[in-house]
Length: 143
Image 1 (cartoon, rainbow, N blue to C red):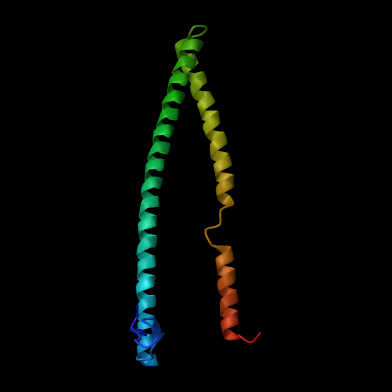
Image 2 (cartoon, one colour; image 1 turned 180 degrees about the vertical axis):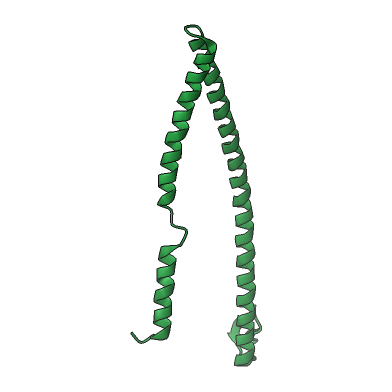
C-alpha cells in the first residue's frame, strides 16, 4: 500500500489513514502517476496500431494478389475470345474487336472515376467548421 496508510497496533493490525505527506507532495505524486499512465496508454496504442498495421499489410498483399489473379483471368479470357473469333474471321480482326471492347470498358471506367473524383473534397469541411466554432467560442466564451 501507499505511505498514506500505516499498520496500527491499536486497531488490531488494520490499516488506518495517516496524513504524513503534504498536499504538494500528493499533487506531485498524482501528476507523476498521470504522466506514467498517459505514457503507458500511448505505448499501448502504438502497439495496437503496429499490430493492426501488420494485419492490414497482409490483407493488402492478398488484395494485390487477387488483383493480379483477376488481371490474368482477363488476359486469358481475352486470348480465348480472340482465338474463338479467329475461327470465324481473320485473327487480326478478332484481336482488334477484343481490343476495342477493352477500350470501351476502360473509357467507361475512366469517365465514372473522373466524375466521382470531382465529388471528393480535399478540405475536411466538418473539421474546419468545428475549428471556426471553437475559435468563436474562445473569443466569446460567455455566449
